[in-house]
Length: 398
Image (cartoon, rainbow, N blue to C red):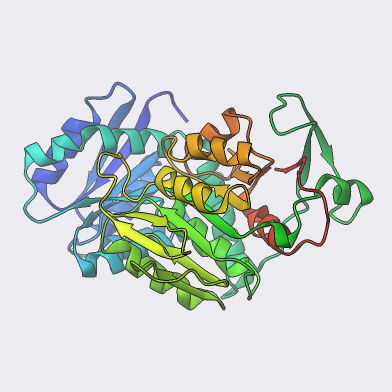
């Protein structure tokens, strides 16, 4: 990959193409190497130009963006950032695109003008650079496609993961690490993976953002059929999209997955997806509160906001997981959870679409385990169902 990111823009709107090109090339790190006016052209130009990343519209003539994404991922896997229309129908199509391998999306609407789009300049450039510079992402997309081909119609998440590598820490804050490869059932592995007992955890939560929908579609179906605690998920996503995401995940899992509702009682064995554009917290009565407050917080929903309420209600009896995403939402409150005795699991750099949120947690030195996406479900399962007695974990699975 060159130092300057090579971007292919696929959009049938001359206005969008002109504005996106101007915006992207205002960054010295980006060069638009081609423009495709439909999905068929996008496929051809991807093959010819081999861009680092593609921005893809969905509604285009000749061949739409969804078909193009599916073809590109099957034949020449390339990171794709979707430009999606902000409608309920659009949310379904956008999730189809994410399920087909697109990495993330940015909303537009039919009334967009140049000024509105330029207001999103920093977000668009930040996402293009973060996704395009992830040298592991193209390899992961290729690997996932290979697994799909080899397994026919078998879901990727049912394919056995390779034996994980253990990275030993003397404590959660130590910067000294030692790499050891060992069998999963070895005595050393058992010793390193001692975690809190099942009874210790009262609730689990996941913070996730860029790359989240596809990662959750791999993670959640691999969890046990019966979760012993409620699982709350903050996925950075706009309104209307989280309901569609929850419905889709619910069809893939044997436990219940739903968009959280104001006032409902927390139930063991249920996964709650926070509403997009709103804040989700838990109350001392173990109910869910959905509100616009605090309104001054950058992210809606926010990992920090939920984690603060979880800390207030459950103290340290929390399994807190941080996964792929931009920024550092959640890191500060996860640090407080760690001090209270919570168990922190964070995704590693290699399997993160964007190594921002988990990096912030890992840089704080508060992660008890740093985990690849393939191993994440196994770690969460062991945390919630293990019979061991150690209240502090020291194993790090890469």
